[in-house]
Image (cartoon, rainbow, N blue to C red; front, side, top):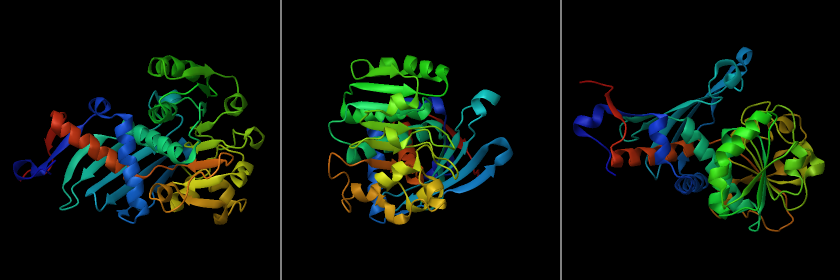
Length: 342
């Protein structure tokens, strides 16, 4: 779709969370994010590492995430927080975000949109893509460590990838969160997977084909003894320094793929053991984007333990925001604001 000029050139499209949700389908987001990964591997993106502000006394942080996909002519900046105490203390979401979509030809802000659902969907999509290239093709059992927002979109992506799963086990420290998750996701999973509530992280992990960790934990929740050959692990929760969900011994057994070298070493699942010298760069196989672009192999045997560490990439936000923007223009959704009057 043509970029807007003339009278609308100085107007900005404002899109709310409620307006965005109906526009995003997980399979379409997966296609967009997979293309972004490929562009990254081929060297056609600009994406500085996340910039962090840390609010230690409030147990939170704020991140700025700019990016430019040069061949796709897509550019955006996201500002996003992570405050795990928000639901209990303020009745607010843990993660909130704003995305500014920019025309790279002139710097005009095309849209300002809520980024919370976009963040959830693009991260879920990344997990699904990781499973596409790294998990066994015959995977049937999924274990979810954590029952928050990411557990929802990760499962959406896996069901989009596999069509059907035998069972999905769910564990969270909060029994209330597990019950809410199953209640909300059962209609979506009907005919596709059986949801099972379990009492411990061990029950989730043991003998699963795919494990997805989505908690803000700062100490390991998954023990090395529970991991068996052939498993694939997607690590979502560790996205800031000091966070970790896995026993570091697992990392020494696994074929590790990062979403980005700099971000992954700084704030991904490997950040704590890497900072302590427990693992080295030599223990990390590469980036998922390299597999997608055909530059490195993914899973090469059914017995490998594969691991994807996701910190979340600004290019994922950008392509998903562009998908939202194009659909909003087509369907005439949103409100135009005269941001820079003549």
